[in-house]
Image 1 (cartoon, rainbow, N blue to C red):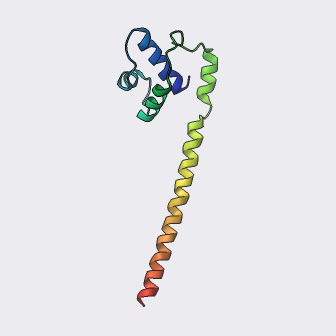
Image 2 (image 1 turned 90 degrees about the vertical axis):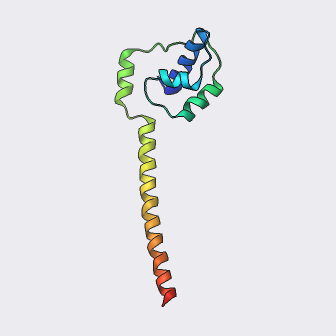
Image 3 (image 1 turned 180 degrees about the vertical axis):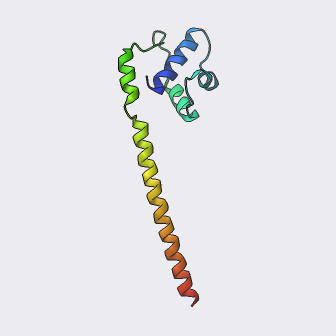
Length: 106
């Protein structure tokens, strides 16, 4: 189950009970920490579907999915690599600027 599915399911359950699905209500019931913008954007597009309160999935499929690297993991690794490359480039640029400043003073 994706985090968006979990948010939608929780919103539908709240609405089925007559409660308005607020960001605070959903955040409190989520199984793991989720950034507020994710909750907000999902709730903005949410439309009440009374029957969508769970996802029928085979437990074996869930186990297999959990053993695979998620898209978030590869995205985070790519982001980490890109940031490391940018930090290295910034250090090189700072060094070159310092060399130019030193030449200019002479």
